[in-house]
Image (cartoon, helix red, strand yellow):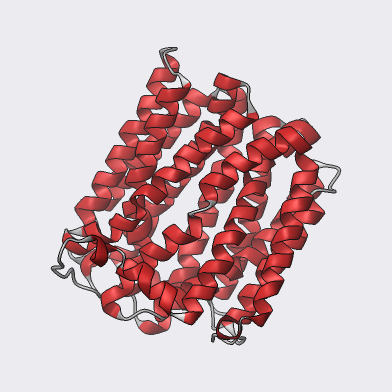
Length: 406
């Protein structure tokens, strides 16, 4: 294994600045996710209501996602990404200010969080689409590994720090720090050369119509590999999302460690994913991507079942570390197939549509998690969701286009 690929990648100033800025944005997202969950729980004292608030938050991303690629195709991308993070800073900061002023209610919390989520789509899509176009072909896999790694770096520091801040200082400070992270994105990204993010695929004037916006989704439906990939990821994310929300209740009800325990569990998964991502970015995976995706998805399901039987927080963190290792490969192989398959003229819209379709069920998984934990308690929820994920993934062994995808 050699890290020379990473040295070449980060020698590009624009790439280095974009990655650094995005690290803060993703760190801010982690603080918001933790703070939002516990703020809703404090305001309502209801797992069901908390799940519905998280549903509104993730639903905001889906509501705007199909049109993010259209904006990125029509207008300069750097100002759009700066504006996105300014809106997020104002919304999340507004939640913190309302909390400090003792005027925060559940409707204001959900509304501002949803607006921040809608805005965030621009940077999320922009990073996924255009970072690979800023690097040579031989560094595309390394770029995906960096994308995954910086997400996991934020996932290591964010949940643990946010959990400690929430437990010791309260959710208002958690949201305030999240807003500060988006301000830091603005400070760093403002130095990215104006044309750097527009390299590779130049914006093209297109007719503004629903048909044009949905062209990427139509391509996914017609293309056998992407169709199978989307079916696998969408349902898999729904089942996995139930367990991600369930970690808060596992920490609170099973381990008695509250927000801090949830943060440490999420951080353990991120550490595993980070290490695996760095390793995968040093070379080329020698096995078919499709078969590897199916195997890793089924393995994650089995690990979630195992998580239900862990008696202590420490053992849960070990299981989640292994889960992160397996999930890192899944993300990179999925990104490779999604980036290499569409024609250049459909790349942004196809990736945007794929991201939205892949996360379409996440708002419902948040709501289902709240209802399920209330009805079944948390450990049976992990057993049921993990087993269904493993079984569903195994069905795709019969999907030849996806299984054989290289």
